[in-house]
Image (cartoon, rainbow, N blue to C red; front, side, top):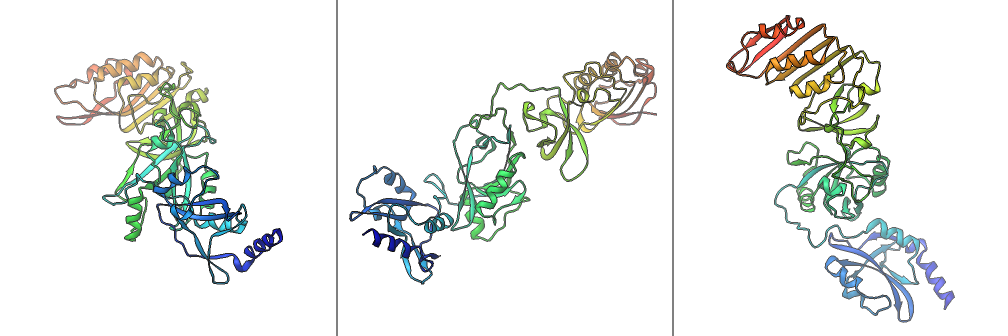
Length: 444
């Protein structure tokens, strides 16, 4: 009997018996199962496809119980190299390796569950962005590939509100279209898995869609791309803990006064941005990190090239800062070096309204500035602003400005002499344009 068994196994794994073509197609709501047991007293195995609504019943059978396999699913059939149609079954405890590999390549778990509605009503396409605290951190998803229809999808490993994936807007069975700006629809599972693992130091950005949306697009031969107007740009999230499950710690400390120098992706422009605009926890933000940064409601990718610039450059003499974004009046100062030797400071913004508190917070750390240029939109009392400058900058010898004063004619001072008398550096300030709603002040 043993020799007969060995002969059958050898015959089964000979080239002529290798699987060549799929006969049994897998549907979205079916999972592949390997059933092991005894058939008429002999060890046997069967590969079957089980509908999702029967999976629980199948798994509820205790080991060693007698079952009729056909009550739970259908046998997988294939065409071999002899052009014979065979059932994916055999004698023994385990299938031959060639069979196992073929099944792994062509079949998978179900790509939906009973909660998924495949009726299309409107596009559900989301651009989801996550930033790990450390490269080794898990984001809370497992990657899957539905071989019969050639698409990638995810499952949430745990549906905890604190997980990165959940907070980023990902859902179980979302179809993955783009990963970090690269279309991965034509990638094999191995190719995408390699890309996912080698990019762990980068932010994770996925363009995903619901199963219903995916089927609608493929049925109607519509193409996914990053410029679709129906894409929902979900606000990026970042981990404030190194835990895999609980990536959000509400009590995490944030340095509201720090700022970073950022070199933007695809160009050499360097800007200074608030730490609050960087979608990465301050505790885990390092030089050379690539992060997403919020600028005027948009999210751009850039590389951190310096943190706490004043502290990092104790001998810096000249600093030019362009403020692109102002969130909650916290822009850019360091929590150290209260008496930095900086001599020249240029601070300008085209769109952000730099308030007195923001400007004063910056100047607290740079009291030795001798030359100060300020360009901003301003909607408060200029008298208070210039008194504040004199209070902070004891060595100020030259001041230049281009200030758009957003006050009506009745609310602003009409006589600029009051400004000139605060400090001799302000004598060159004059109005170059004004109407009932605003006034532009500049230095000659």
